[in-house]
Image (cartoon, rainbow, N blue to C red; front, side):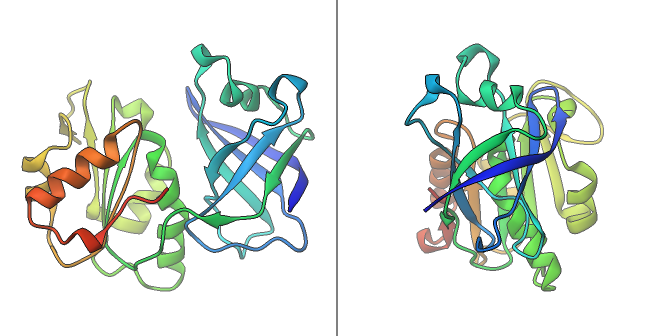
Length: 221
């Protein structure tokens, strides 16, 4: 089933990441960790759809998406970034992206963090955070979004790693076996991984090398 929904809010979170809030159809429901397919009303993109994870909770009266814009690709994300409040998108029903396995370690690269936004918000709402921790990898500090909210949810367990900027506040480099070993406090908890390109598979391989049970590793779609 498809829905035609209006953009009710648009906000740039960083220089290349936008947050869209959409009107929520009265018969639309979903759970944290689910995604939708999005299409734009433009003949150039006829038949083209892209998946995005919903970052809000079903208790909200809107739907929320966070996405990275790639201007050089001249594709759908650029088209989405050019839309304004009051314009329309076509969305699908929600489908499973990440399975909620409970409190755990979240490992994200850039906008790969988006599937974890709703999961963490849900865990907070249900007091199910326990000792959850998130490793958030970006190039520079200016690329980090939702920083204050993640800090409020996770406190000291919100750990940032930058690959192209050194600062006293954050770790420097790329997520490797050394960083993982130093940050993992519980090897029996779920591990959620999402990021660009082959990020998830690389991190999964490192976790397996550290003897993490493969059944605890969740890399979503």
